[in-house]
Image (cartoon, rainbow, N blue to C red; front, side, top):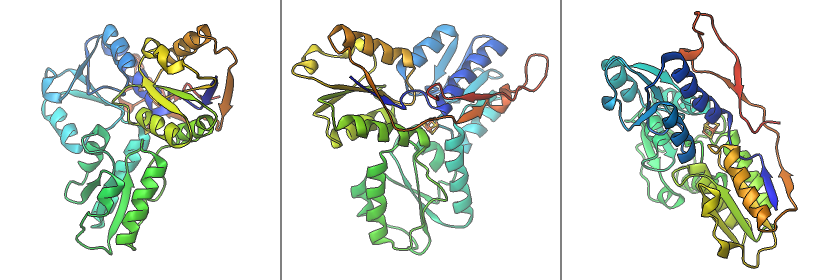
Length: 323
Ligand code: SF4
């Protein structure tokens, strides 16, 4: 068994989950959360048991209640709607998503047309696009880059969702640049460190794996990308599962080497259950394939940085996969 590392929780997910837990401790249940705090069904179910109530929109939250914005970020329209309703908002948007929001605001202020590479309908893309709706055009795939039209080809910049396939995004950019040679790059990588690191690790695992199992939920963009990347880089088969009991016996037939990884919103306990089941099926020789060290940390959302006695709590939180 080849176990990819880094895998699992990133710093932004860790922070968002702890934010909900802290909010529940501090303010008591229920604490409302707009959308899934992170895209993992297990995490959401566990938080529900503790008193979190997940809603689609802020108009489902009773006036005056606490509402947490998810790690994927929200548009200014959502922030305003929460404020108009008198909600006490706690913003658990990952700081690396906020960074992309700021880029969008800045380029829109300078009257650039922003080509936002990302998946239509994904919460993060909706939030980023909502910062500058009149300046953003979403590019959903490399093929769309061939047909998209812009107002002024001398004033275009591309930004991206944080959880895309690096290779596919670069292909989209290549095609865009053929059509718009003056296309500007973002000031720094928008695809975040966690997404990139997990893709690099699974590429290394995939070339030696008959089968790759990715633990992660169907709506987790970075988890789904890991399946695609594994197949692209040589895995003979790759599947995504939420839980160990979804691994089918038939997948293991004739398989000598299994690669295992997990998306950035997946607690390690779910990976451990897969490893235990695979060990029971005879895959006991486990080798870790480590391609990066992670030690990024984020502090809690500012709304939670004061303890009950009113003292500031600026402790930094870290991704649980750091070593
Ligand atoms: S995957 Fe990246 S952008 Fe998303 S929460 Fe994690 S660190 Fe932040």
